[in-house]
Length: 64
Image 1: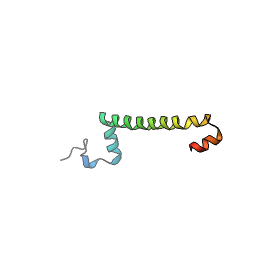
Image 2 (image 1 turned 180 degrees about the vertical axis):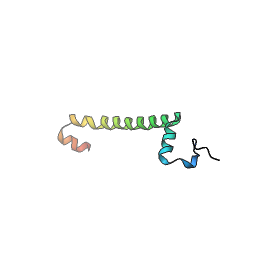
Image 3 (image 1 turned 120 degrees about the horizontal axis):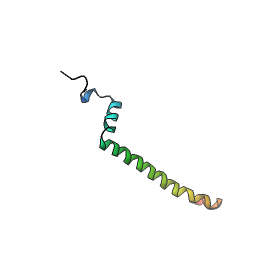
Image 4 (image 1 turned 30 degrees about the vertical axis):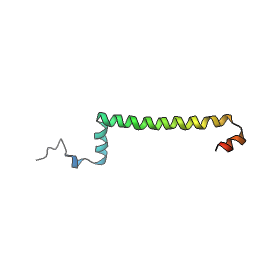
């Protein structure tokens, strides 16, 4: 007999699996790591792109 309040692993839908992972400490650390990596890439991309504003139009074409 299966307890209705505690479904087995096979009864979890995809959305429920994501919620189950989110409710763990490792899941929250994983989300933090992924969003931190995205933020780091965002900052690096802007550090590369922003100096192009201070370069003349002809030199800007050479950089690209």
